[in-house]
Each structure stands twice: as structure tokens, then as C-alpha cells.
Image (tube, rainbow, N blue to C red; front, side):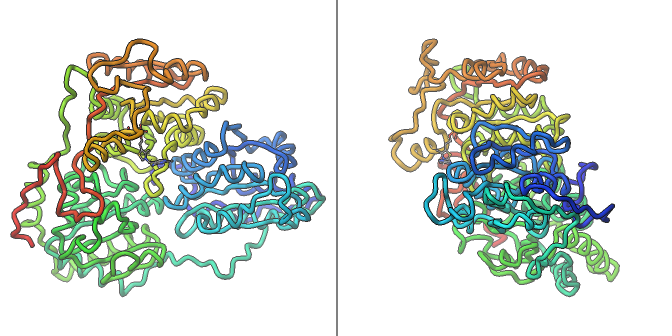
Length: 617
Ligand SMILES: Cc1ncc(C[n+]2csc(CCOP(=O)(O)OP(=O)(O)O)c2C)c(N)n1
């Protein structure tokens, strides 16, 4: 997130790494030591809910002038808020919960952050050390439970370890491939008297992420790029995490190669850039999906060949050699063998590649992609993203999302839930900058949008933050609107209300003979799709629900009111605003590659396969 001048560079999060101003040694409780450690690593916002085991920590938290605690309504909200905060600010997000159910309520957002490589630290209280393993009240082995979904986790029973563990947790979360770290602290360790020492020595002998790429691999990759006829820069979320978007643009413009950005990488390369082909994958643009299929070189940067991108793996990009650069060596060759593997931080990789490509140019080797661009331009022209207007003068969901994007603009942050509205947001909002698109890409967690938007707005209060949510997702975590209203976090929420679990319904339409088993929600349009129900039959009524939580609730049902309602919401900044957009329920997300099929089977619209000609095969 290069634009955030105030954000520290990823990895600079621990005071343990900063020049030590003075050595502090003080006697205090473990709980006080925890809060002092959070202050020392620069944590300014913690999302959480207290309970018995973590209660000792909440007492000194009350006195902290540096750490703001935001009392959420559900721990899942705390976890996603920490994720939203982290992605919007480039800093580590923090959430806190008590033992047992408090901790297990964090499991989903921790898994979510793990899948999307988001740096968060989750702090949980644990039952007293002597009671651990006895099935004590509110005991859960949260370290065991989160072992496979955290980058690292700690169980702390010795209060003297708290400063070092907190410093290490922040360091591990933010460096290398970012991810969630859990710190579980026994209640007696929080209560005991201890010595707080700062700064601390990190003790991580086995943890040395490789950030500097190997020069030989870089030279090899540069040679392949200039030698290729049909290369594609396949860009993943790692490029945003590494704050490498400036370098990406330089490399792209230097080489003239086309770029695709995955769902996690939207904003890494401007959507408006002529070299951008769009998003690849199940609901990607035809030019992006097809370019990968026809490419002779996938130049992969911080992406992981996710199955939603590759479709049927053995049919993916069958003619391409692969350069794969990633900070995490475990990603390389995991799904697709790499001809040139590069382990390193995307920013350093790109910086070195720019030099290496320039050296190739200086030696008279320059790629000629003109024939490739003829094809790409033709596909861009023939298969642009679009949608059918809704029948009967109703609102189409794509139109709602497109207008929000246009009126609110590329400076804002957009957080999406999971489903059709998420895919339409990725397609119809123009992302121009990194850190402006938050979504649950890997886990696909419904309920992500509202709390993630809350976290983003808490971290970036001067930026407009919009959650684009589905009516199903909204019903999973909307209670955090009360948190927003009470804590002066005026987010906007656009509920794309099709009265159903739309994405599941789309699969039922396409693959289950239109048998709509358990996908009607009764919150939006009448479920025959023809007319809105009589007043009072929407359950719940999102306008009333939002008003009850201290928000402004608006409703929009007709295309002619669309712009005015969005503008009205934009003008309200003293409270959260929820707009209930009642949209046509039969709209579908296109293009689509059906699950398990090859990307060659992409459908531009239902039953319509693009004609590429096969001369590039
Ligand atoms: C926690 C969770 N449960 C279930 C699913 C499966 N799922 C994926 S999309 C979807 C429907 C989402 O409905 P809605 O929020 O209304 O969005 P729409 O698709 O209508 O835009 C469901 C149930 C999921 N992704 N996450």
C-alpha cells in the first residue's frame, strides 16, 4: 500500500526492531505487561469482548492512552475487523477474546486471515495454568484448534514471557508471508506480578523469511519474459501485501506485457490501464481467462494458482512455461510446477527484475508482443464485461454496484461479502489503487463485509468505506453496526438484496434444475421475482433493523432513484448508513467457468462460449 505514507513498511512493526530509545524495566502484573507490550509494538486499536479469563487484561486496558479498544458484538466481528484494519492500514490488526467460546468465535476470522495472508494478532485469555487440561469452565484448547490456521501460536503461562511473545507475534504476523498469530495467555499469568522489560530480544532461530531473490533466477526470468511471444503477468495478492505496486507498474510498462490481477490483487494495477486484462478465474473476464489459457509464459507474482483461478488444473494454461515468484517457498510448485522458481519479497523481486529486463534490452533483446496484443485487444473488444438490464423496470444488482463505484470513486475502500454481489463488485467497481478492495478470497466467509469495513474505517477514519453486502451475508454479522454507531465509525453498507442466497441459487439454476432448495430468505423481492412483496412482509426489514442499531436506513427499489440515494448516503457522515437495494433476483454472474471444468469452457453468458479461433494453440 504505497500510498499510505503514514503506514510503516511491512515488517517494521515491532519496537523491538526500532532503535531502542531507552531500556525499561518495571514491576507490574502480567496484564499490565500485556498492555504495555501492545503499546510498545505500536498497536493503537484492539477489537474485542471481555470475559472471565481475559478480564485481568481489560482492567489496565481501560487506562491506556495509546490503545483504543472497540467493544464488538461478536468475536467474529472482532477478527474480521482486525483483518479489515490490517489491509486498510498496512499495519498488524489486533483482536481480543476470552477463553472457550470467546476464543472459538475467533476461529473463522483467523482461518480467513490465514487463507488471505493477512497479518493479525489474536489475543485470548486461557483458564489458569493449573486448570488447563481439566475441562475447566470455558476451557478450549485454542492453540490446538488454531494450529493449522495460524502462522504461529503461543500458550503463555509465565508472565515474564509476555513482552517477548507479543513482540514476536507482531513480527511473525507482519514479516515474510503475512498471517495470523494467536497468543493465548493463562489467567494466572495475567494476574501474577512480573517484570516488564522493553525492548526485548526476539528468539526466533528457525524463522528467517527469504526476501532477497536469487540473482540467477531473476536473470533467467527476465530472459524468459523478453523471449516470450505471449506472456502474461499473473499478479496475486502478494504484490499488494509487499507494497510492490509501483514496481509492478514499472515492470509492466517497461515490458508492455499484459497484466491480470486476481481477486486478492484488485487494485494492484489500475483497472483503467490499457495493459490490464481484468481478473482471471471462475468469474473472471474473458480476456484475462483466455490470455492465461493461450499464454506461452505465466509470469506469476505473489499468486498461488488457486483452484478458483486455474479451474481444472490439468487443463490450465496448457502451453505456458511458468515463472513463479513468492515469499513462501511452500507455494512454489504446489499446484503447478515452476520452470523458474523465485523465492523473495515481491517488491525486491520486481525491483531486481526491472534491472534485469533493462539489461536484456541493453543487450538488444526485446520482447515483441505485437501479435499477442492484436489477439488480446480483439478479445477485450469482443468480450467486455456487461450485464442485461433487469426486466420490468426493476433494479439490477450490477447497475447498483457499478453506480456506487462510479459515484463514490476509486479513493474509497470497498469491502464485500461473499456471493454474487462480491463477484459483481470485483467486476463493476473500478479499482485503481492498492488497499481499496477488501474481501474474503480464500475462505469465502459470508459475514466478512460489515466487520471488515468497520475495521478499515477505524484504521482510516478519513477514507470513505463502503461494505457491499448480500442479504444473506448481512444477516450473519450486521450486529456490528451497533458497534459502528456507538464508536463513531460511520461506514456505509449497500445491501444488494435479492431476497435469496443468490450465488447458491445461481448454481441451483444452472446445475440443479432450478430446484431452489433452502435459498429463499424473504428479505427482499417477492420470491417469484415478479413484484415486491406487500409492505411488512420482508423479514427482516433491513431499514428498521439498521435504524434500531443507530444507523440511517434507506431503501432503493427503482433505477430512477439510484443516484440520489447513493448521494444521500455519501452526505451522511455522523452515523453509519445502510441502503437496502431491492434488486432483481434472477441476475446471474457472467462470465463463468463451471466448477471442475477447464477454463477453455468459459461461458460469456449462459450457453454462450466465446469463439477464439485456435490458431494460438
Ligand atoms: C459462512 C458461510 N456459509 C455458507 C457459505 C456458502 N455460500 C456462498 S455464497 C452464499 C450465498 C450468499 O448470499 P448473499 O449474501 O445473499 O449474497 P448473493 O450471492 O445473493 O449476492 C452461500 C450460502 C459461505 N460462503 N460462507
